Length: 120
Image 1 (cartoon, helix red, strand yellow):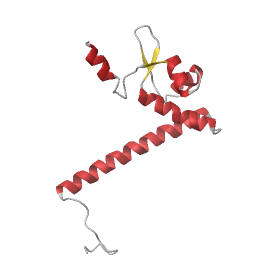
Image 2 (cartoon, rainbow, N blue to C red):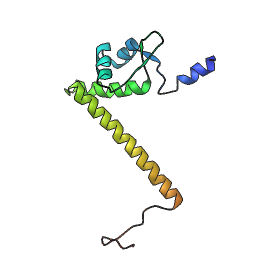
Image 3 (cartoon, rainbow, N blue to C red):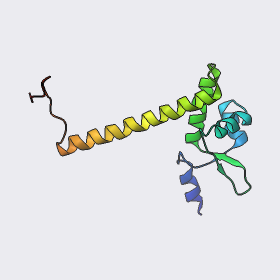
Image 4 (cartoon, helix red, strand yellow):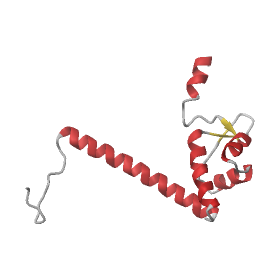
């Protein structure tokens, strides 16, 4: 791997660049919190060759949202479920927007209809 390849990874949201300690520091939380949301299957950090957890920027954003909910009094298991559902909703909206865009591009968009189903 060249130095250029390593620098390219810094722009990759999914590259596991952060150690447990650094991730906890960035989030203002504890390693125990990160382990707990991992056990709740909110995030699944990759492991280094030495077996240490490594987190990506995407995982840190997810963890930050869970921490926000926990700080507001939501139990950690519920916070993790909420974040998972929010993420799924966002993905569904993104896919829906892509389908609408593709339909608009091909001219197959829905036609306006009157209440009785007649085209206007």
